[in-house]
Image 1 (cartoon, rainbow over the protein chains, first blue to last red):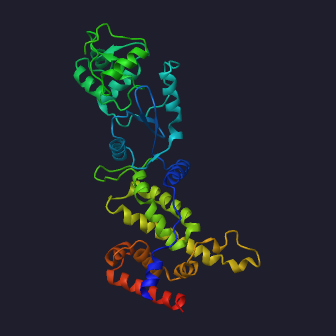
Image 2: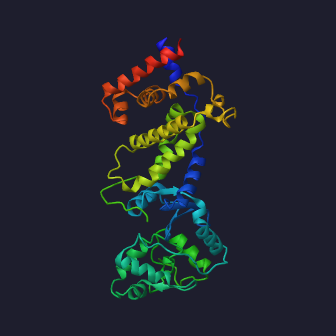
Length: 207
Length: 163
């Protein structure tokens, strides 16, 4: 009977497959083979869930939970490499240091940074920002000056607003010269929280 | 070195391919090589795909691309089997006996002994339920040839299984 044979051919007796385990195993093998160009992992923080993305060069992106992870992965696929897999253990160092920072036990991050997502003047601004120590603040104009263009403080503000690695590249430490909070990609509540955590509160809290 | 992507190519994050296609590829591979080997084959498929991925010139029909790779991995398994027939083991029981496979084993071992083109066409047609035109696209043949491969395979199966 033709129909009977075709029916039997439709069922090869497929055991169920655990896609999560497959992903984990692929991530491990890809890393061993040098084929994992972007690894990512999540952590919980007092500021909500954070996503950590690393490349073999270092931390390339850190984002707050309110940004769509799919959109970020798309951006990394385009700008860094599409070889992207979830591999939490590759982000362990970053996650551990962030935990310590939020618990108050760490004032300096000791991590290599992959600056690939920032170009030109924005890169200069963010590198200057990375040098502001814990517990200190700077102004948009000072940062523009440190980045080599004292008059480009608006451009400096834009660069800080699109910082791909908040918290660790501490753009929250940059305030208006008069003491106003200025802006923050993650929202001003988060900026206030971080400044508070670091024992710095601006003299005036009007944004 | 991380692969370079030219700005005109939009490839999704690789992980999304795994999520979207793992189950169907697995089903395909079970049809071709059996449940014992399918999972290994699936991993090898994704590893090969990951290696080549950033070098793709376009992101069209990634699904068909993955199935082509899976088909190649299944062929490798079939070749290894021919090279190491269990009867050569001279009384030593194979570690994973063939009867570890589920019911309908006789039918599926017959499918797996079909010539490659017929085997792949049969699995595409009945396990994945694809129309002939799509089978042709995936196997790089016309839909007429796809139909011929399926009916030749069915004829052989009927001869061997339905005696």
